[in-house]
Image (cartoon, rainbow, N blue to C red; front, side):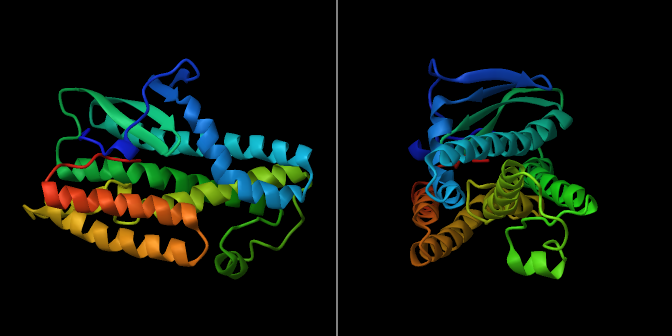
Length: 265
């Protein structure tokens, strides 16, 4: 289910700095640009934890990039294993804008029906949210206070009660994993094609027999993307604003020239 991509969503061409391996028989390529993108995304939170200590800043950045790598692999493996369930192989590319799960061959079945493609789309963010829930459960059952990133939820569930996590590096790892595996999948579920949320809306409409489901999903995406972009610009989140502004433009272009959009996981 690979479609024509907008340039800013296209996976980068292979380069010598790429890391390549396989996981559960699924080929993985980590672009050399992935590390730069991850470091830029984590610079602010690592800087706040380091409190001016350059050595600690470097240590926190390494932990952050490891957390992002692991989290995105969980997300993309959710998609890839869902593809496999429907008889279709896939490969994964991680790059500076996130990740792509790209179907490589069709089996006897494959994820051909809208309902099956909806399951594939939902599998990535659900895998991340499941990982976050597991981390919270493990540390809470261990008697530790959990650095949950949503204060109202953490307070209501009593997650801040307990012993402090004994190691600052382990604390940072837990904090980073929860940040990435809660906020990122929730953002990915915003109904803006080609994010997973937009894909879910599209396939859901097609499953219900709405013939113009792709166009309606793009129209919803323009409105939702513009709203999130505006929120980002007005709440000192420029990266979020820029990303959703570009996604909104991509949705609008798909409406005007009737070109299909690519899954962006």
